[in-house]
Image (cartoon, rainbow, N blue to C red):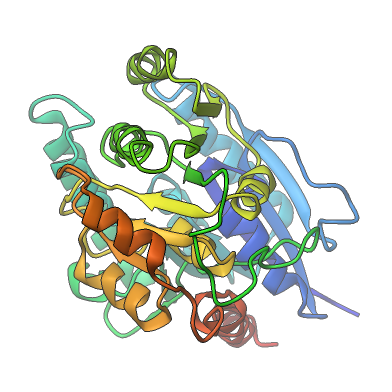
Length: 380
């Protein structure tokens, strides 16, 4: 039987990326007539038994600011000519020009998986000094707008992007980063409803990207304050920090704090290990600094924390608060404030997940969307 070739490609994410491989890739691999390829940064690849027949191409390996980032485009072009995909899903804006050129010359449908509002990130997060961030933001937006007329469909990781991005037209589907439980263990370790009153030691978790903007220092401060009332409280920080200077600052900050444990930091942590830690903790922290680039987004770990039955404490945000309230999954809290006894009493005495884990936090509904769109584009 002839199978339609589908290539999922990212320049900076690992070939075993959570969204591109585990969620979108595995969802498409369930289509009998599809042959799924995933290209990305060099990484440890899943075993053949976990890969669901997906073919990996760990092509890219370079320092973020190096000539290798440019030569990666040539590698991508060669891969396209080798695989000859019928559908190409690109998850990095830097790959768009080469993808556009290939699809213009061949019978291939282009899908752009928009994970972030890159223009907003580059122009507001001050990752790059001075005017450089604004210039890069304008460059990325220019590439996206130029290629957009040739894009058959857009996947949007956030609902807000439908209003924020001016080049979409009506060719988009919101595919959120909802929780896909691992087959290795059950989806939740908690019995529902959930109470924290008897949890000893009370284990708090900060997972994912370790950065100042995402509030890892506030997570440490919150745990320190909480220990005034809950002396057994302990914090695990797990994830990767791209800013080496900030990582060193964090390590010095937590070095005298025996109740804080750091896993990873200077190395990528397998997503399955992060999910394992979520299974073993009671409280999930999202102490993000209020910022335009994150305010309208729902972090992946919010879905994961809720899917695993953790009580969630988020920075005050109307979008996140709605999710928490609907599921009685946690509380909103301004991490810039001092923790007080009444707030601790509310946290410990409330009952959470009164109606169980909500189905809306899981990936299954998003899987059906992805399969429907790609099947239509591939003519399956």
